[in-house]
Amino acid sequence: MAETYRLQQRKGIWYYYRRVPAAYVALFGKQFVKISLSTPYLSTAKKLRSKKDVEYDSLFDQYAEQITAGIEAPLLSKEEALRLVQTYVGRRDEMRAKDFEQNPPSSKAVLKSLITEASERWSQLDDPEFLGGYGVDTRTLNDVTEGVGYAFDQDDFSYSQFYSLVVRGLRELERRQIARLKADYSTSSFDTLFAAIGGSVIDVQTKTMRFGDLCDTYVSEYADDAAHRGIAKKRIDKVRASVNLVKEALGQATLVSDIDYKACQGFRKLLSALPANKGKIYPHLSLRESVAQAEVDGRSVISHTTQKFHLQTLTSALKLGQKLGAVAHVASDGLQPMAVQLTASEKRRPFTSAELTSIFNAPLYTGCVDDEKNYAKPGTKVIRRARFWVPLICLFTGMRANEICQLKTSDLKSTDNGILFFDVNDDGSDKKLKTKTSRRRFPVHPELIRIGFVEYLTKIKAAGSDDVFPEVLPGKYGYKSQKVADWFTDGFLPKVIEKDGRVGLHSFRHNFRDALRDMEAPDSVLQQLGGWAASKGTSDNYGAGVKPGHLMKYVERVEYPGLDLSHLHLH
Image 1 (cartoon, helix red, strand yellow):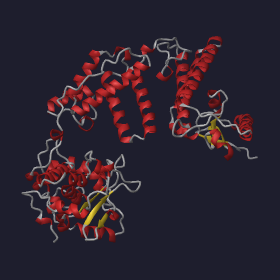
Image 2 (cartoon, one colour; image 1 turned 45 degrees about the horizontal axis):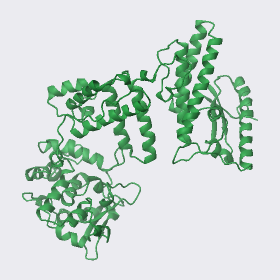
Image 3 (spheres, one colour; image 1 turned 90 degrees about the vertical axis):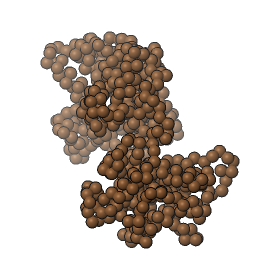
Image 4 (cartoon, one colour; image 1 turned 120 degrees about the vertical axis):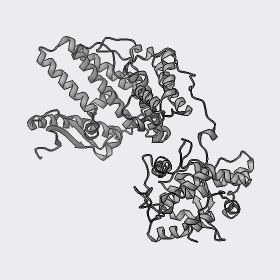
């Protein structure tokens, strides 16, 4: 046997490393055993290896007996897992407290050493690299489950969720140990998940819970629940950002029990003066500093909708605090924003005729240096790629930006009569649609053909691209429209029109709908072309929808008086 058999060295420390037999992976939960032996000496590691071999041989023998006997492991629920981890933390903490009383440190040097060791253990438990590479001793996991071999339902409560719960328990134990060694009796717990579990530090009521801890617990629970419900990461990040804002506004160290109606009213007033896009405009200023600076700069404040969202976040966090016993009443419940609620038409508007003329007579459409950094500099090139086509397609189809940016060349089809149409769908793993009614077939407007869309499509196909706009890459949340929309709204528009905060790439969709209304298009045509929700009539549930040939009669009549695009025509 090799001297380092089942041993690996990492950053000077030896680890026990062993593959789990394939037959036992499901019961063990992982393919490998990876455990720190906490020693830099090979001779010591070899001795500890022998002990680990015996320990895991015994465990795998138990698995073999269990499989032979046909014993089916019980499913572990989230509630039972929480009970097991809380029980384990309470039991281990009592043992440590008793040992500390009976065997106190013999000197300051020993005390310092113990604090260092506990701090290092806590640091490891907070290190994703360590947890991913080596993790928690299986013996600890067995102690938590009291020797019972549980199974896991990935869709209900997974092994990784249980593992994360155990790590939280171990972190709590080490933080309590550090506090005990430092004679810090200011709190009974550090993670609110274990607030009701006694042990080492003098017990105080849950009312000593800090608001920052409550917010962290709320985010953790929300993220876990969101993962089960399939909520998009974009939404989870939005909630997390809102929680961070609420936490800063109310104060991390504030006692949850001190957050009364007056404090909630103060938060409501702060929101009413908070500048829009604070993170972009004043990234290094605090909330209150940004409010003061925004008043000087004359910045607009966040909308009624955003203010309401942050108030709801505070209420949701406090309701969790109420369940945990940290606060008796949710003082923010029912509070409404101070901002005036705008109607849909006030929030967004279509471009005016003059604005459309300015947009499509910008250097990007009349001649620029290039369509990247120098798209606003006059030049000799009219480059027909995504930045050129997306606004035009938005204007003459009313399609959502992401529906356009994710188009495949195979999504451009023709009817038997030769009418070219967009097949808007979410076929494929990289496509996303807003609603079920977004699936539709949309005729290509004759103006797009005159401008050369067919020639562009032919060129893209000849280049071997499956994507209509191959240079457009997905944004942070997987939407291909994100970067194009940000560029158009924040980069392009301010250079060509006077922005008022109510226009953006989506405004073309409003222009398109107004054009359909002006020609008095039937509701069925509006619904089919725009992908808007259908009426509730029974007949709406039958048939394959309005065909492209019929829709073309309305699409070809869409026009914008005063807008002349003849300088873009190829035909």
